[in-house]
Length: 249
Ligand code: SF4
Ligand code: FES
Image 1 (tube, rainbow, N blue to C red):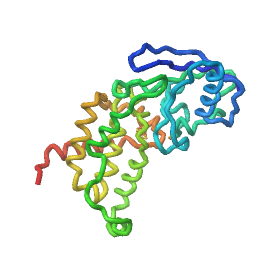
Image 2 (cartoon, protein in one colour):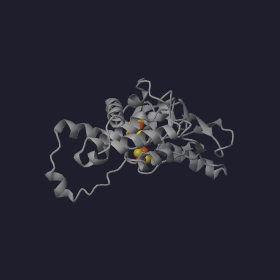
Image 3 (tube, rainbow, N blue to C red):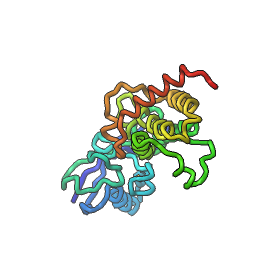
């Protein structure tokens, strides 16, 4: 198939970016979206031109590195799919595809389609971990977890930290990401000792990084490649209120 790409090109964080039209020719429908960009980049390099910079790592939907706005949708038009899992058979010969980086104040562009998502790392550093000794695997099996809590925690733990929820949200809110991390850990027995400080510190860091507020629009849930549910945001808000009004022991 032959396609026309309209790709955001930006030399550096401070440079003025613009869309560049690039032809993608003889692309197999079996290619993944990132493989299609590899083919385009090989051709650009052969012509002595600068290849398109884009983030990727595992290419199997688990690391959260790939991050493209494709025709206005974070990770493209397919539900429950990361950019690296999207295949060209979902496009038609002759299509024009618009490719942009995640757009949010807290995710500044580094180059072309790569953005700096270290704001997410700093939110995790603020409390997205369990520091109590949890023993070895058999010890974990000895502590019973209510089925409902285990299911909710497991759904939240599937978050790969890609940032699509922020990119799609009109407020650039990080509520879905932060609430997934808080739900994942606060619902487990091992995570409860630090539940209060985790909730307060992660939310404070999220605000400090410049992410927007949540207005319950739901675009985050619609584009999340791991189908993380918005009810985690309700859990986070309840945890926040509880943490605010609970005295330290
Ligand atoms: S909640 Fe979904 S969209 Fe947001 S960072 Fe996690 S996996 Fe990505
Ligand atoms: S490259 Fe790892 S999730 Fe896409």
